[in-house]
Image (cartoon, rainbow, N blue to C red):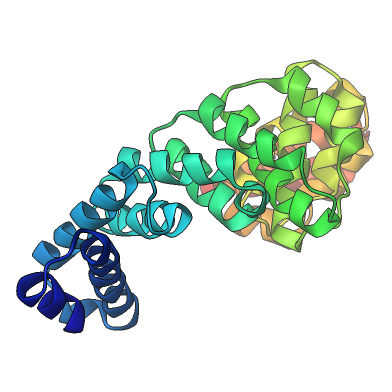
Length: 273
């Protein structure tokens, strides 16, 4: 390595700082291209060299040193130190401030520690700088998700009219799930039912609102709607034991005054008991 050779053979104050930076860069590039070919000791060395650069009154490249050191730190699981580097970049560089990918990296570090408020602070700071709808949507879903973790239903419902609900299908269902659960918590039964209705019965979320959804039919006296839901083939095989499904059918058939169906289901119940 020429830079190693320069430091050892022709040490020079001006050249040494450049060489240290480029040695760190060489290690970073190897780590990016062939991570299995580089030992953790070398990565630690690159981190130390970037740190030396950042301590100078005039670093060789302050942004690159923060950015590359941050990724190397993250690779070695020094998560809080990595977040500090990324935070510096987003605070001091307008390009990085709008970098949604970097924002999500920082937010995810907080989410992994269940620091939902801190994660949303990161997302909100970047969101205020964005103009592209698609980029905003990537942060919207994360903000609402964290608000749900915080049980901030009023905040979630306040976000609802601001959102463009054209996410991918799974994320759209996820949002309807949060809205439905929050409406349910606030006893706004019709709103809750409307949100749950928008979610595919085969969604991974259905089992988490199944009982609440049924109760919205009771609360709104929409017993025929409840019957229609329970009679779907997917319900019996996936969302509740057979005896529970039969009992629910008897309940809703009775309230809908479908007496022949009540008798049929009572016979089914007797047969399995």
